[in-house]
Length: 219
Image (cartoon, rainbow, N blue to C red; front, side, top):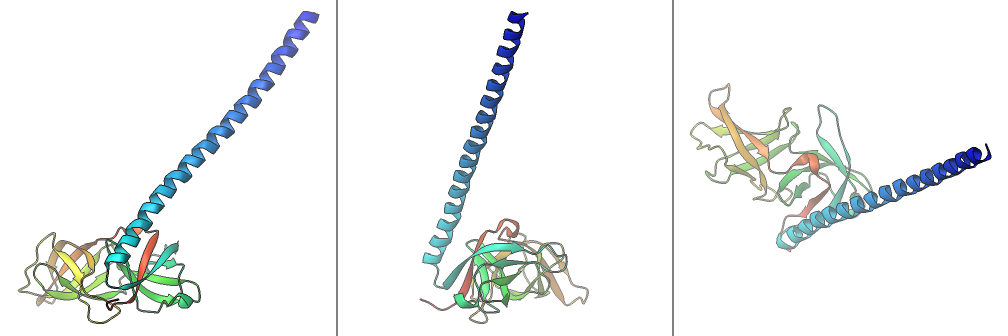
């Protein structure tokens, strides 16, 4: 009987020791995975920031780097919030870009943050030009998550895959920034113009950092 109790006690102690060991190992495993995840995130962030820095050095524009701190999930507006505001030199109407191309424009500014209307918002209009044919028009967003270049003349040469750029009619919208690529086109209901559907060059769903064009003049 004594041997049985001793064996049972020994087994119970072994169980608790093993359980504590498993808990410790589980915690250590979690901490290790978290460190690896943090390390990977740091690598990705450094790569994104390096691209922004390289682009900032190469461009002739004066740029304000900003981090995306919120995104608007509303159905009728497409916008995001960045962590730079009036005290950082941000003004309403300034173009917001990424190394790949146009993101949108500033439409609300507070002291420490600003709201960006994305290029896919139907309320945004940007004078634009097709790089290959030099046809001009106005790009605005659509409810389908793409952009539409409107008011192209019926004699326009439109090809799938053509690149659309900003036309640059004022200092807040500098010339030659990529907006997107033409994926289709159609004749408007008025019968006197064409419209082209664009896929935005920037993946707007994955933005974490952007650049605000403060001055479109040469440095």
